[in-house]
Image (cartoon, rainbow, N blue to C red; front, side, top):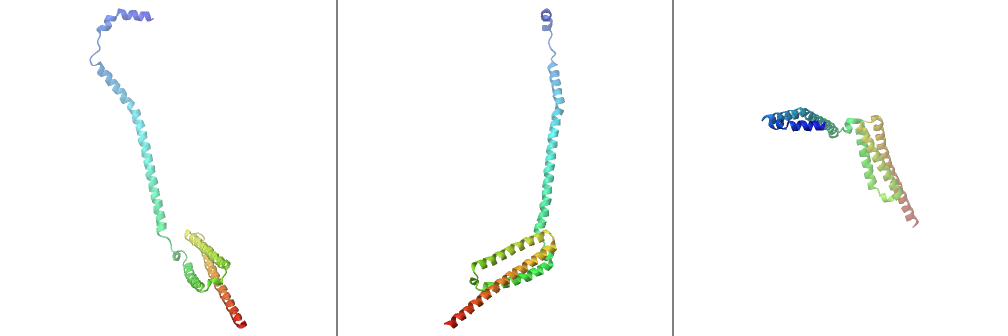
Length: 194
C-alpha cells in the first residue's frame, strides 16, 4: 500500500506543486478557529457563573449572620442597660431589705464599739465565716431573683438570710456583753479579796 501511495505522489508531483492556496485561506482558518473559541466560551462562562453565584451566597450568608448578631447584641444590651430594680421585681423584699440592712448596720456598729479582743480567735473566726457565707448566699439568691427563678421561694430565702445575719450579730453582741460582765465581776471579786 505504501508503494502505491509513493508512486501516486511521484507521478502527480508537478500537479501538487502547481496548486497554490488561496490568499484568503488563512483568514478563513483564523475565523473558524475564533468561532471554536467562542463555542468553548459558554463553558468558561458557566464556570464563572457558578463562582459568582457561590460568592453571592457566601456574602448573603455573612450579611445575614452579621444582621442576626447585631439583633442579638442589641437585645442583650437592652437587657443589660435596663436592669430591673429590686423595687420593680419584689417591692415587699425591697422594704424588708432596707429594714434589715439598717438593723444590721446598727448592730455592726455596736459590735465595732464593743471590745472584740474579748472574743477568742476561734469564735471571732466562726462569726466572720458565718457572715461571709450568708453574704455570698444572699448575693446568689439576688442574682437568681433577677434571672426570674421561683420568685416567692427566693424572696422567702432572702428574708430568712437577712434574719439569720441579724441574729448572728445579735449573738455576737450578747456574747461580748456576757464576757464583759464576767470580766467586770472578776475584777470586783479581785478588789474585794485584796
